Amino acid sequence: MSDLPPLPNGSVVTVGTFDGVHLGHQAVIAEVVRRARARSRAAVLVTFEPHPMAVLKPGSAPPRLTGPGERTDLLAETGLDYAFVLRFDAALAALEPEGFIRRVLVERCQARELVVGHDHGFGRGRAADASTLPALGERLGVAVDVVAPVAGAGGGPVSSSRIRAAVEAGDFATAAAGLGRPYRVSGRVTRGAQRGRTIGVPTINVAPPPGKLLPPDGVYAVRVEWGGGVANAMLNQGPRPTVGDTHRWLEAHLFDFDGDLYGRVVRMEWVAWLRAVRKFDSLDQLRAQLDQDGQAARRILSREARRNPNEATA
Image (cartoon, one colour):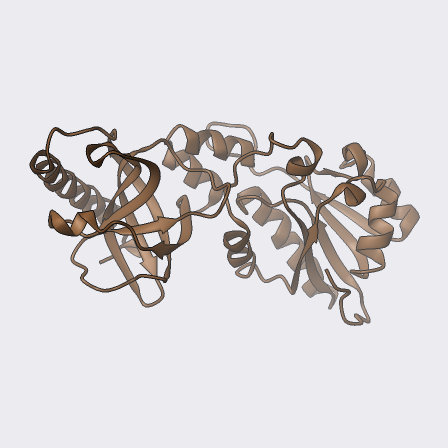
């Protein structure tokens, strides 16, 4: 993280992991941008990499709703002027809240205001939170504003943990309600064994970001988007037991598409679960099942497109 250029009116800052950039995060960021514009200040977000839990309790960090690149892309759409990624290490974790505000937010980000969520905490042991930050900020010359929680589906505030639980259960409607968008993964298309072509079902293999949270393995109806194109598809997520492959793949067959996406970055959106991954006695049985899967996926995606015409794809 480098220092900001001189800002005569300073900045309005928020701090957090922002995994998922969900509706609660978006409310905080929107308040940062609103205040910054009203006072001719810079709107600044400070976040961390790796996830703080990976440093504080190695091995216990939660799977990510958004990989670093996915999070950056989402933040770029929010109206922020600057988004800084701090390397989270033992030295940063040891900073007391006052030291963090003074050294990072005031000295490096020229903060005049700090906006946080209702459940926010930072500094060693998360010692600073929404109840203690206003007084601490006043002592350091930084006004602190706490944004109220955003209510989630079924009651309770939107949170990354609740969205993770929904994704882990394959509940895409609840996950989308908290995120404000469908649950997606972005990754580069890599070369596989090309077995799909031999049975008339060519596929693309997508490598998800490390640590990305995936829903339960299975066959899904999905949408795939890339620069200049979009397609409906069916996805096999998990192993390929019929051919003895135990590796966990994201392998999608794009409908009505005959192009080359090798090396391209695509974004894939889970829409609906079709069936569990299973082993077939022959490739002919597998091919017949894939024909049924494809028909089911097309019906589901067509129905979803009619419900949500703004999200319709090819």
